[in-house]
Amino acid sequence: MNILEYSKLILSRVSFCPELFKRELHKSIDTLENEDIDGLKIWCIREYGKDYAEILVDSFQLIPNQYDTNSKRNNLT
Image (cartoon, rainbow, N blue to C red; front, side):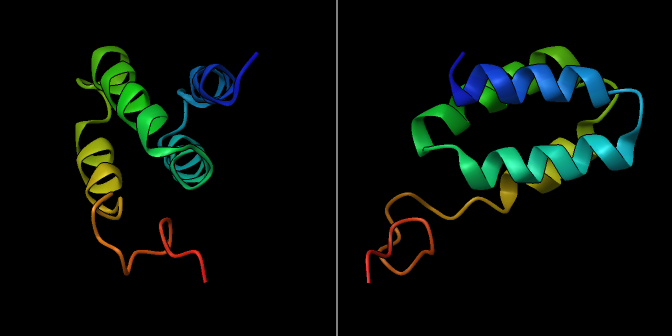
C-alpha cells in the first residue's frame, strides 16, 4: 500500500469527526508528493465534498505552489 492509499484509508476511518479529519488531512498533505496531493484532492472532493467542503477548501489552499522555488516543499537547502 502506498502513502496515498494509506492516507485515503486513514481519512475514511476518521471521517466521522471533523477535527480528526482535518488533522489527518493536513498530515497527508504534508507527507505526500505534489502529484499525489492532486490525487488526494480529487478523491476528497468526490468522497467528502458535501460534508467537509470548508475543510477541504481551506486545507488545499494551504499547499505551497509547486512552482514557487521558495516553498518549504521544494527548497532543497
